[in-house]
Length: 504
Image (cartoon, rainbow, N blue to C red; front, top):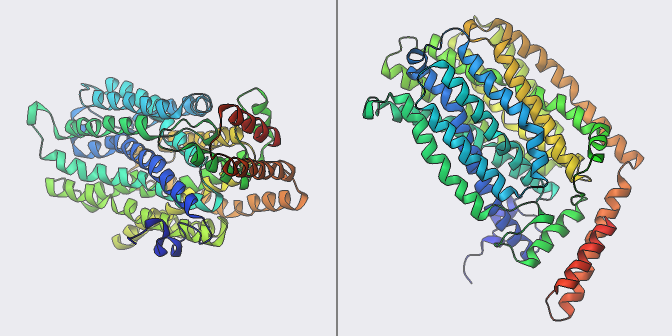
């Protein structure tokens, strides 16, 4: 018998598949990994490539060519995030009624076209327009893919899949630096500067990826029309989620607003997630500007290449930490202790940056260690999905609300705490980072308290029991069919759907 990937002992050892998982379920999970994660990761990687290209272009000639003096880089950043904030919740609401396999790829094609337009702007005002529309059209990418990923997997599978998906962010940011170095060799080709070629090549990468989504990407399980999954696999996918207490879609209506407002995870994680997303912020643009102004100020071609290369280290180490904490948290069965460890390190690093007058080596360590602390951030998303398993629509909107908070901070912080004119010291910014580092550590017990309170009082337990009962009913119907001719007629399928939704 040849090598059997699905029974690979290494996959069991690392916890990719539980030892008790049946073979047919392993086949399904492996298919889901391919159908969902390949496009989700590729599209988000391309999105981060396109969005972050402006920062590498800024230190590679764009700032001089387009007169981006003062806080103009911050304003460009603000325009992008303002557009993203406006479209955040509507985007995820649309995802519950529109086919994700077409909606997300179509948006990707559009932001690719606006990225291409960025390569040919002649002035600052034109660049503002391009950044606005890149923000509008790229909004469904990250939050939409998060919604799809967290709608297909069991709770013990979410940490690792969210970590893999999260890693597309640092990979995209890293690759931008390497790509900009390559584009510097094209400087003058076709009468275009090297930084303009960066946006052209980003578009060439982005647009074909959308075709992968249109061909392979599935919608949520109870509205899945994927040709790559058999009817039995679609049924098994729904049964798996019902067993975990994940509620099928109830449809969009005005009642969802009341359910979102009454949901504590929406507001508690809105604060906690955004604290964890913002405390490592100095490892991004401030680190790049510190390298550019302090570590390598001569601005020779060799210095520019070194800045672009070294700026990727913080992203690279976050990939390692994301996978480590994902496997660790899935093994532990909780998310809070990984976040606690990251929070302590974040506080120490931000204190070093606030002191500032320390050896360059220690500053470099603080920036890189903050990159390491970016790794466990994705666990907050898995924690939200687990807490809101009982309501798919609330989960979708809550994820969008939480991510909208990230966009608001991403808009406001560069304009206030980390203004470009204050580079590379960013004294106000580092004070802000230390303060919120303390607050995030104090916040960790709050979701733990509510989670344990709900479990103790049996809040949402009735809904969860009914959802699990739906899985049992679905399993019984499947057994009856298997005992017959092994197929499900259209009428039987309708009856099955009615029974499952009635039980849930």
